[in-house]
Image (cartoon, rainbow, N blue to C red; front, top):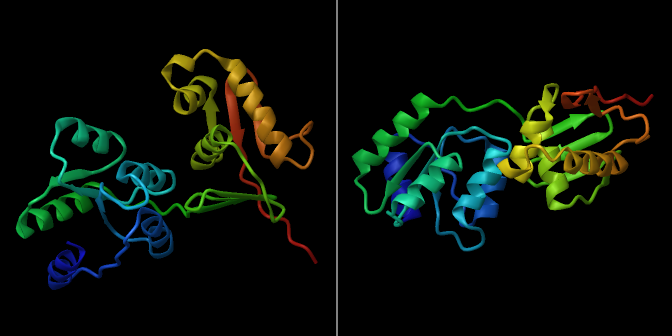
Length: 219
């Protein structure tokens, strides 16, 4: 399938970069910044929806899903996860090319870099790697989800409700204790002085903000 797609796409002016696995695809997307992504849901290492969700953590590149799965719930799941279109196999080359053109017209790829830096903090969203002063920091899945959400909205005030809903789900919207506990964990791991945070700032009565701080130069 990849060979046939390459032949068809290159014949129509596309430069094609292939990836055999989901993880490889994420790395290629981070390194090469494609204008559009064709994603199969049946991958040997990761579920296609997991790849899509990971990609959407740091990129808004148009994504067209190709799949033999033609059930409504599969299509809805992919579109809700961030796909721009869903094409079921088998498909015609003219149809696929038209869908690619339409997806590119609708969505302009974001210029956001997959590596975020602020002061002593560096977050590689593509590789899910967090460092503070060059030392890798181990985060739990929930801690990382909270940090990644703040990174994607760096500089903006994020309300308690929005953070809780996005990380823990709609039923947790009023459980501010969750947020206080996990923000304390993040500060302990990421701030030079957790008692006087410079990165993860509390906006009293509203929520939290991740500040964008220029990296200090060393002479």
